[in-house]
Image (cartoon, rainbow, N blue to C red; front, side, top):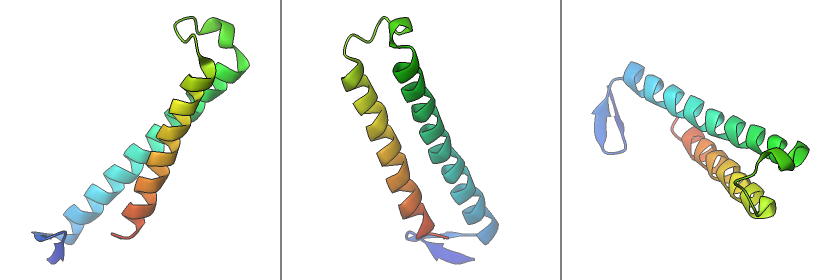
Length: 77
């Protein structure tokens, strides 16, 4: 076992946790990217979003945060 963020975790558990988080952040990025494509290609079909620029900005922030988390997660491998 090794120490990970102040607690003891078996390496297989550590790898499973890191892999799960990596997939989570990648999924968040993919979802936000898909949303941006929809807003950009057919903004008329997205009626509940009056301010598309603001909505796309929020999706970009989601991508940025997920990338930041992936970068931090790489420090734990």
